[in-house]
Length: 438
Image (cartoon, rainbow, N blue to C red; front, side):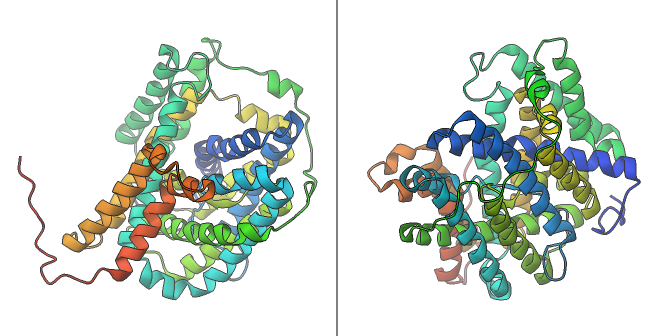
């Protein structure tokens, strides 16, 4: 990796920068539109509302990403941070939507964004309470929680009648192998853009297999503007505390992602200014998203993995990707074209990038000394967080909102790591690590 690639302000030649930016878009697009699809389907909105909110989600992601990469004044980390619709809010937004309607969903989202903007002013104190161990646990949990999504996409996507068919798995494997080979055999642009070229290769192979459906592209219009506040805004009192908790968890996630980018792309810790600006942009992006009928935004961990994979830290690359997202959000036909990429092709790319997220989290965790105290924090955080996520019926007797937060994986892991790091005393014998026989 050259010193220029480690510089967030470095601008590669425009054709290369555009391809690298498009690679970031392809890495996050499926997840970005999956969240509104899940929430909309669970609440029971009609097909027109579904298309409308997917378009809004793409546009909001582009605008929020620009706040991170180019944000004016104190806003934005000014690092290659990609914003997208947050999975962490799903457990709370679904019951809010079912109980109070979409106006409450967007009112709660706006409130959460404002809370996170206020939290950004305390980033100095927060950073001392969220060391690399805690942020690393959060990043690793995110990656481990997302990997099953990558596998499901690789098998054709949840709900596919041919889920697990050989051609889906073959396409995913082609993408994975192609990405690895390009990264290992080529330096410079080709190696850095390996995920992009691997997706292109998978797409080309999918064409003669009859897996490309252009129906949605042909039916989509060329230009459309989302109508702000189409569903209205409400803030039921009962949703305030859950949204405050989620704003805090999202802040920990953002700190972890920005730390992961700085460590994975430049081998350094993130600065207070980068963290403060990143959290502020994260909250502002969520508030802005609520106003244009999109769900809460957050930094996207799969793109953290992509920065680690490519070794390119340029924020301008991601800015170009943000412009592509904005164009896709304003031009439904263009966005529909991107969505023709088969799930299996995206799934192969997800497996690589989500795996890199896990690796970035491990790298952050190991910045701390792995003595007994820190190993206990890692064990309990990952054990309970991922354990509850994999066995959700274990807490089925709890109230729905609390239960859904506990089985999210990210929320319990982040909270447990944060609390244990504060309350567990340093151990004089912390350098004595138990040995495992075998």
